[in-house]
Length: 112
Image (cartoon, rainbow, N blue to C red; front, side):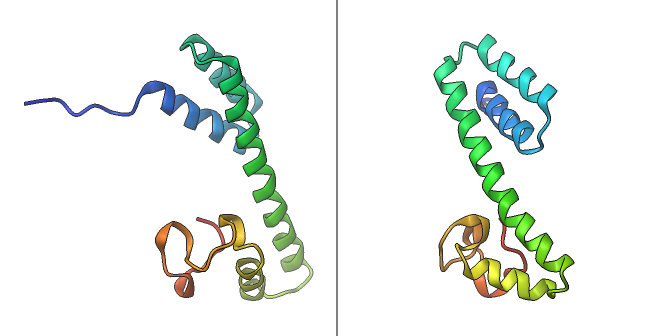
């Protein structure tokens, strides 16, 4: 019987690096960059992961920040969610389908 193998450790470290950047944790970000370098991941590939993670985190925060401001200004949450999902498809980009294959008509949030 063969043993089932998990994900490649470098893939897990890349996911952890992206999460550290998204959560804006500089110490964990530095730790994960060092770990990837120790695994032999080339610097240009680590930089590509960092740039992508920063872009996603920044765009998501900009959308969330606008929604937070609208709610604080008295706009009903459902109105904000509806508007956000119609403009640029929420944080999932422009799409008629919902996030991750769900039905857009039953989606309660704009993010996956």
